[in-house]
Length: 82
Length: 171
Image (cartoon, rainbow over the protein chains, first blue to last red):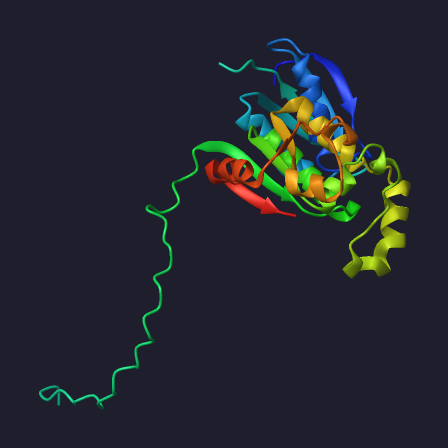
């Protein structure tokens, strides 16, 4: 994977469904086209919800990294709706 | 073996009920949903159910659906100004779990149902209306409710919105 600059990371650990997804949506709202942001979630619902939302909303999920504490880091690239 | 068809026993025809009035049928079947919308009838005013309703609304808003929430009875009651700040009511059928639920909500710093609804409004198109019948019942005006409530409407107006919706929940 070519190197990607994450411009913002949101740590939503300890927030419950649908909190981490909401954090991601809020974060992407203010991001520019092509900007990459990361959200860390400890809620198991995020594993289904974030990839589904990212696909539906026309953004791009670059990767999901499992963290040692059981949380996951979702790295998402913003794409403006066409 | 297969040549003769056994005659079924003769069963006398069922007695016809005396001229029942035909059921009033709609002219057409319910038309398919025309709106990408989730409708919710929010009847309950206990936080366990308000929480579920607020999470459903948020999920629908996140997935790009419009949301129409119609408050009736205890749903209206829970949206009276500032009531949510002190609302610790839990469904009576789970009254024995009330203590543990409230403890867990506090310990885990769970976002309140009101915050969820505010979030849903922020990211999507969410309209919250109050049932005019309940408003009359409780002697309330729109100004007595939290500002998150958009309008007071009659049941027919809500049914029309629900008819067009892809799904309707009753909570």
